[in-house]
Image (cartoon, rainbow, N blue to C red; front, side, top):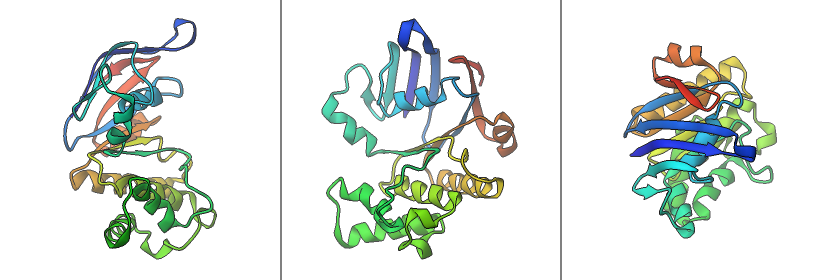
Length: 218
């Protein structure tokens, strides 16, 4: 499903953000990507949704190759990937419902089928009763749940979560992890970037640790 083959990524002055990375992610996997700030976690996620491209090696995602994908094909790839961020990235002038629906509207969907998908996603994260609320009225955990619903509404094959509990209190963080586990049990692969090696060990998932752009533990 996702193959990262001997991938390296350099930035300014030849600095390696990632070096010689090999990772395979299969259907239904739950994988923790651990490491401190600057270790290369976000860079790796960006390579998967092809926001950037490797300088060496190749990234293969759902049949698309980083070496051959065309610019006009990238939006179609991203529609198959759910992405959530530490800072939520919600539209402040839209309600919870409208934020989630927007992910479908940009692909041309509308009508009853769209409403059904939005409410299904909001019910999954426990926010159907907040559908008419605006982001500024929500807690950090509720905002992240909205972001998860937005990512799931297009029924992606994998969910990429970049430090999804970084701005949330411990209780809210546990709720987010539980939702991600439920999503994974239902068949969606999850790749979660986090500082917390201990969290990954406690949750019992497979984890890969990055240090200065290189894998130190699998």
